Image (cartoon, rainbow, N blue to C red; front, top):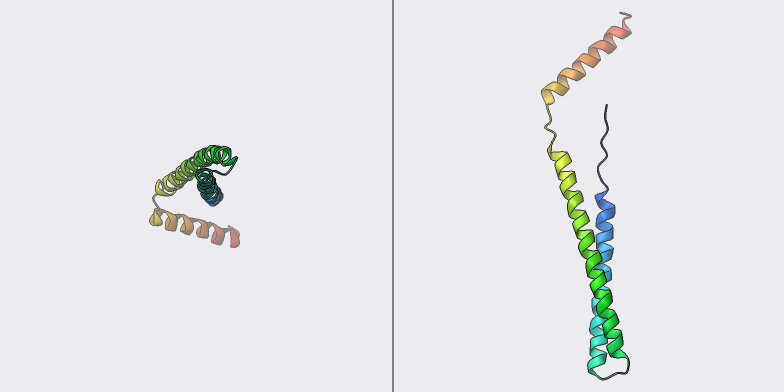
Length: 108
């Protein structure tokens, strides 16, 4: 009997959630740095530029993880969707195996 293991979509979704959290945090930092730059705080423009770079990087990570999760979902749906269940064939196979067990138990 061949066993198939489905990809771990749960861990991919957890990574996606972390990427979304990171993106939101960096976006807040960018907003704060921009506010401080507008108010003329020394060094705030440099902080805003750094936050903008971090936001761009966080966005790339977020999109990469979203793509990964989508691929896993598609793969899981494909694996689950490609096998039609044939209950009649399964019932027949179970019957054959039970008959062999009965025959083996009787010694013949």
